[in-house]
Length: 350
Image (cartoon, rainbow, N blue to C red; front, side, top):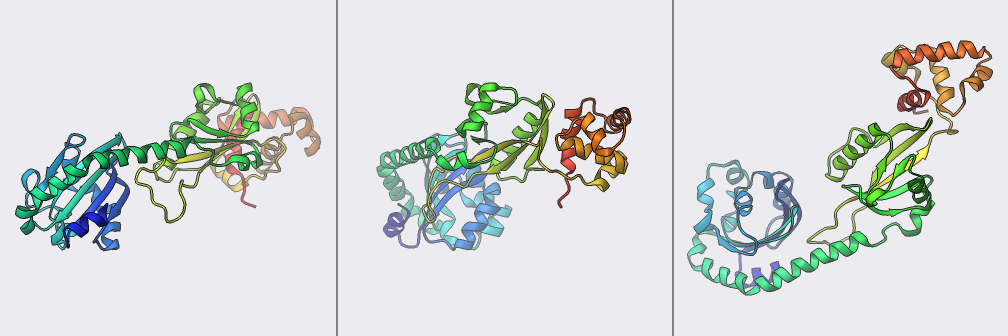
C-alpha cells in the first residue's frame, strides 16, 4: 500500500504504523521514501515525543484527519520533535491520515505525508483516496489481527517442549498457558508446586509467584528483569524456576503488521539431588555465615537431611541441629526448605 500511495504522489512519504498508544511505542512500521536511519531514530526515541501521535490518540476509529486543518506542524514548531527529527524532512510536515484500532496496545495509523506547500492541492485528493480504500484497509487490519490470533494459538514448540528437563510451560504476559509438557501437566494436576487453574500458570509459593509475575511483565515488555532464575520451597522441597523469552513468531524477512503477543518459556525443576556449590564469601558477607555453616547449607541444598549431614561431616546430630539453629537465626529463616530456597540464590559459578 505504501508503494502504491507513493506512486500516486511522487515525493510523498506514506507511513503505516502499528503503535502501542499507552506505552508510546512502535510495534511495526512500514515506510516508503524515508531514510532507514530516520525510521530507526523515530522508533527508538521520537515516537514518545511525537505530537501527532498524541493527536492521533484522540481521533475516533476509522475517521480521516488532515494535519494542516486539524493539527498543523507549525503548532509545535518549537518542540524537540520538530527541531531534532521533523525539521530536516520537508516532505513530512503535512499529512492526511486514518486510524484503525485493533486492541488497547495495537492501533494502526496510516499517514500519507507531503510538504506543507503541497497541502492546499493535496489534502482533498489524499483524503478522498483514503476514504476510498478505507473499507479494504479496515478488512486488511482485521485479517492481520486474525492471523495473529491463529499464530498465538498454534503449537510453537510441539515435540521440542517434551525434551525439556523439568516442568515446562509456554505462557503469555498474563501467564495464560499456551503449551505444556507432560511433566508440567502432571504437576498442575497434583497442584502442590504449580497450578494451571483457569488455564493460568501459578506457583504455590507466594514469593515465587510475585517474582514470576514481575519477571514476565518486564521480560515480555522488553525490559531487563532483575533475574530470570529464582528458587523457592514447596513442601520441604526446593525448586528452581527459570523464565526465557520465546523467539518471536514469523519467518526472517516476513514482517507482520499486527504481531503476536510475546510469550515466555517457564521451566520448574527440583533442586534436590543436583550437585550444588555455594559461594562462601557471598554468604559470609550477606549473613555472616562461617565456613562450617556454609558447608552445612551446601549439604542441605543438595538434598541431604540433618541426620545425613551429621554423617557426612562426622559430627553428632545434636551439633548439626545447633549449627542449623544458628544459621536460621542469622538468615532470619524458620524452616529447612525456606533456608535452602534462600541459600541456593548464592550458588557459585564454578
